Amino acid sequence: MPAPTSTKITRLTVRVYGILIDKKRGILVADEFIRGNYFTKFPGGGLELGEGTRDCLIREFMEETNLEVTIGEHLYTTDYFQVSGFNFTDQILSIYYAVHCPTVNQLHTKTTVFDFEPSQVADPNGCSEVFRWIAASDFSAERVSLPIDKKVAQIIMGKFTW
Image (cartoon, rainbow, N blue to C red; front, side):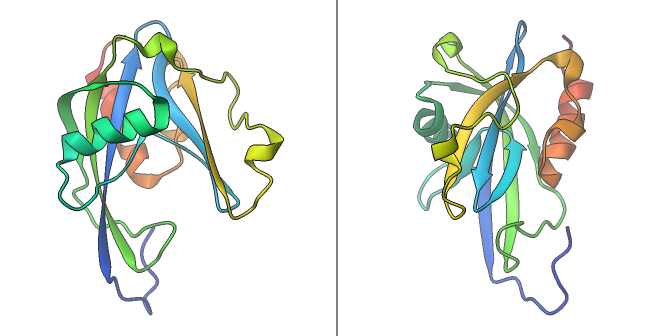
């Protein structure tokens, strides 16, 4: 999504995401409700000042899923200009890694897309997150919402064998 021509980019935001694949269940995604909008994306979040990308992803997984993960192979870093979908003055740089977790069975997941409790989406300015597996046979770029995630989904489909 290109930035509006009248807007000047004033900030770079670095995001770090993890691709967690379970041979039985598929690929882990996060369904999110953010400021009245619904998105399906890979788990992860924003890099904090003074933090390395791998440490960021370990922290984000712990905060979001309460899972301890190990970081594997670097899969992709954004190599084109992408404006933020939330703030048209921010440029997004996203970094993706494979992640591994031996205790992934402890994660509570949903089976239906955007399966939020009514209280989770009651505030149109709020945000909520639930996790869900997408079976390898059902996975495609169309199953995630964000432009960079779509590119990574294509990489995943070409790289991993099920």
